[in-house]
Image (tube, rainbow, N blue to C red; front, side, top):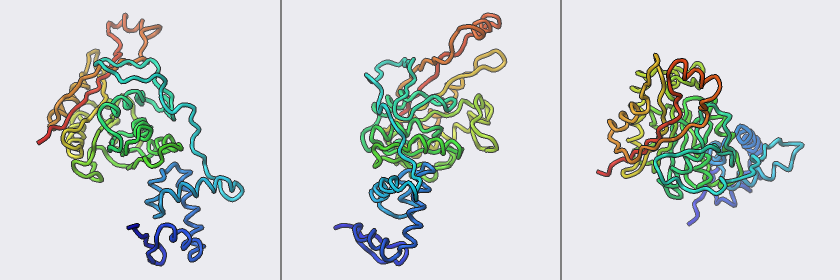
Amino acid sequence: MTKKIKCIYCSEKLYKKEYIYHLETEHTYQYEELINRIVELNNEGYTIKEIEEYVNLPEKHIYNKLEILREEKEKYNVKKPLKITNWEPKDFELEATTVWSFPDRGKWATHSGKYRGNWSPYIPRNVILRYSQKNDVVLDQFLGSGTTLIEAKLLERKGIGVDINPDAIKIAKENLRFKKNYEYEPTIYNADARNLNLIKDNSIDLICTHPPYANIIKYSEGIKDDLSHFDIDEFIEEMGKVAKESYRVLKEGKYCAILIGDTRRNKHMVPLGFKVMQEFLNAGFLLKETIIKEQHNCKATGLWYRRSIEYNFLLIAHEYLFVFRKPEE
């Protein structure tokens, strides 16, 4: 039996087809305000799913209405979906060894390298295809510019993104504003990766994430809980909290993939990657794979080559992709 919708203005219950006509005829002024709000949210980069939650209208109606309003240019200024040249990488094949190298970082869909420190989309594409199925729920609690959720949407997974930085969320929403698989629009929260209380226990099918590497790159200003402001020792301690929350929300038998690299302090290596790995093991995870990911933005030429010789150090040209598994009870 088709479920009825409760009118947000008069509480009358109607079927979907009746509901829109009811709004247009019985609540004309309010409905016009609602349409203006839909346009506003769309232009701010909100997904169709998020707009549905704001205005309590069916997703399909919102989608179709926006398509119609784009033609009424004098009255409405509705942003079009982003133009995409290529929806997927050319000649893509799943990685089959524990060494991954992507000289071409990937520029299909809305991917780009403009957001400092974001990862190649080849990484989440490989992880999502290998460790999840269509309609699975994929979580990235360090959303950044949205690379993981773009891949989740393209690959027909239900994405959930979390970031403590509202500026990053704006960028991610804009990158996700493309006209493909709109039924897989992700859910995005402005929240802390150490406290995922908006997500239920044992509800996530795959975690695929790329946290900051302590305070090597600071991603925000004035956000004291942003982990990209924490120095190494405190960062490791806080990543322990991230690991525990990851363990809580992930389903038993499912996987958590995290990319992390090392750094140098006082002329010596700091094994940041392995320290983070240990925090996830301490949280209860099992280590499924350790993958070495080659970095191609670190070339031993020119100034850096001379410095590596003069000061006797090697340039860090790798990161670790740890794939953990939550054991079954």
